[in-house]
Amino acid sequence: MPENISLVVGYTAAFLTTISFIPQALKTLKEKDTKGISLHMYLIFTFGIFLWFVYGLLIKSTPIIIANFITLILTSTICFFKIKYK
Image (cartoon, rainbow, N blue to C red; front, side, top):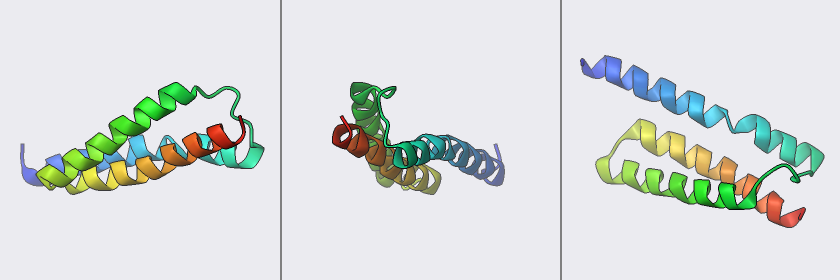
C-alpha cells in the first residue's frame, strides 16, 4: 500500500475513534451525571489507550500517538468525573 494512502487511513481512523469520545466527555461535564458509565470499563479502557500511546511512541507512529494522547485526555476526564460525582 502506498505510504500516502496508509497515512490517510491512519489519520482518518485516528480522527474518528478520537472524536467519538467528545460527546460523552461533554455530556459528563455538562450534566455532572455519570450513573450510566461503568467506572471499571473506563479505567480498563483508559489504561489500554495509555498503552496504545506508549506503543505509538515506541514505533514513532504519529497517527497513533496523536489519537491516543487526545483519547487519553478525554477518557481520563470521564474517569475523573465518574469518581468525583459518584
